[in-house]
Image 1 (spheres, rainbow, N blue to C red):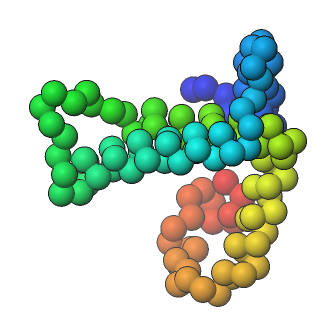
Image 2 (spheres, rainbow, N blue to C red; image 1 turned 60 degrees about the horizontal axis):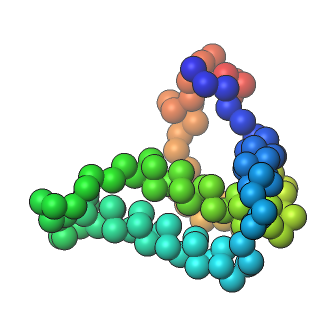
Amino acid sequence: MKESKRLAEIQEIVDQYISQFKEGYFSPLSMLARVTEEVGELAREVNHRYGEKPKKPTEDQSDMSSELGDILFIIVCFANSLNISLDEAFDSVMNKYRTRDANRWTRKDHTSSMKGDGDGTN
């Protein structure tokens, strides 16, 4: 099994990759355009698989995990270009959701859905 990476590690790997090129990171507007482009590619794939528009026989099969990987890469590039820590951004947004949406959804019964010894520490 591959070792999991924190977002900071992923950001560092991407930064090392991008740093080898003179062009470096794209401008924020170009980054946003790239994010939009990559999300569009994922949307196209989802539509082909789950929507009413099948692919043409001449179109290549895409892999949704590859499309999500492309989105992750460009999001990391975007964050790096703006000196944003994705670990901090993620922690902040999870705190927001845990607070704002604490009672918004119907919770599952924890006793029947927990794995392990039932103490929640798995």
